Structure formats: C-alpha cells, structure tokens
Length: 277
Ligand code: ARG
Image 1 (cartoon, helix red, strand yellow):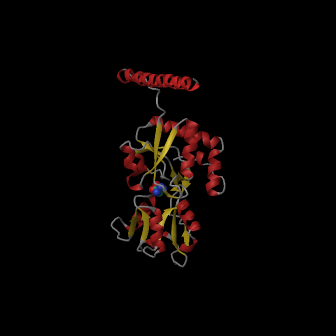
Image 2: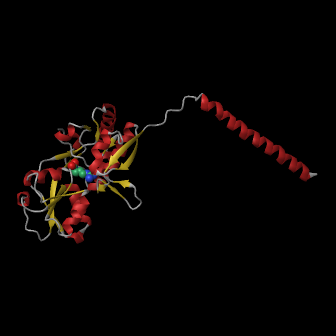
Image 3: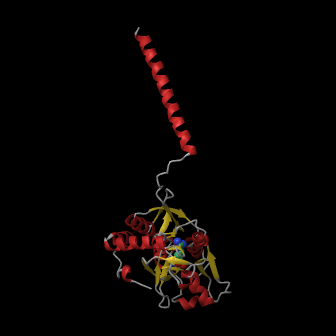
C-alpha cells in the first residue's frame, strides 16, 4: 500500500514537474515575439594595454594583467562608477584600436604628446616620466650625444624611438626598433645593441629584476619631462569626463598615493595632480 502511494505520489509529482517545465517554456515563447524591455546591461568599458611594460602593465604567471596603470584605472573607474575590463593590446596597433572602437580607453604608460593629441584625447596626467639610457655595466658611454653613431634599441613608435631618431636622423640604420621594450633590453643583454633608450620606470624595474644582465643606467639633461595620460577616441568627452573625475577622486582620497607607494616605494615627490600641460 505504502509503495503504491509513493508511486502515485511520484507520478503526480512527475506530471507536475513536466507541467511546470512546459509552463516555463511556453512562458518564454511570447517573450521572443514581444520582448519585454531588457534590463539595461551594465556598460563595460574595454581598456587596451600593452602588457609588456612592468611595472606599469604586465601579465603575471596566471596570465592576468597587473601593474600600476591597471590599479590606477581600476580605482578611478570604481570612483566614477564604471565597469572596466582590460585587453592585452600590442603597442603597434594600440592607437588604431581606439579609432576603430575596439577599445574605449587606453592605459599603457602613454606619454601625452602634441602629435598624439591631434588624433586622440588624453585624461589629466597621472604620472611623471623621463627617458633613461640602459647600457652594459662596463660600457664607456656617459651621455646621450655619444649614441649618435651607435646601435640603439628602442620600442617602435615610443618616445624613446622619437629622441634617438631625432639624434641619429630618421634614415639611420643604427636605430633598432623592437615590438616591445623587454625585447630591446634582451638585445642589449646579448650585445646586439650598444644601448637602449626607454621610459625610466621600466628601465629601472628591468635593471633591478635582471641583475644578471649587468646593466647600468644613464640619465641625460637633454631628456624632456614626460607625463602619462589615458587616451580615449577623439571627441569622447563623456568618457574623458568620467575618467578625469575618477582620477581626481583617487588623488584626493589617498588611493593614488597608496598605489604609487606600492609600486615605487614612496608617495610621488610632487603631486602629479598639480602638474599640467
Ligand atoms: N611612454 C612611452 C610612449 O608613450 C612608452 C610607452 C610604452 N608603453 C607600453 N605599454 N609599451 O611612447
């Protein structure tokens, strides 16, 4: 008797479940032909970054994109109520990706230059930088001018490329252009170039983390002060305003200084917030 009752119960339950499933399915039918207004999907801003530029942006062992720039964008985005996701984007095509709309924002230790300002818009500056020369420890090179007729490695299309191209002339065969700054530094290690010119933060980081490479650095008074900014497609005032608000907020609430100290050991000497161009 008990078993019959149980079987009966199961049959009834089964019919009920089947009915519910059918009901659920049929409920979706009309939705397809007359869709209810979908809940607005939270906009996710796609941030492009050339993640071969530690400590600003690089990939960790898990393949995650990490670094100073990443944390600054994350903190600023949070303040601005924006959702962001980062996509590794080779430097070579990085600026085009903005124009084509594949990326909304770029963060990549990008120096704000007058030339670049013609094709994209920049956030307020968030970091001060300068070129720095890396040579082998036993090198006799003492200043930038001495690189005039030597083989020099740079990352193609960077401000390091600009300064050395200016010194050697644009047709010089001695400027060796690499896809990434670490590749240029590897070449220096192997003796393929006499020097590398790149952003100070990246050169110092590489020298400190590759003691076997036996490099030393040389700064030169002729190098101009540079400032990093985040780039948006020209005319994207809405996103620029959001990101600038976020940046201003993290500069006031102490999170910018905290991130800075995490990567560079101390709070910035002069508040970047006050810097202008
Ligand atoms: N600051 C330099 C420039 O804007 C180099 C930046 C390279 N950044 C990178 N993630 N590879 O030209």
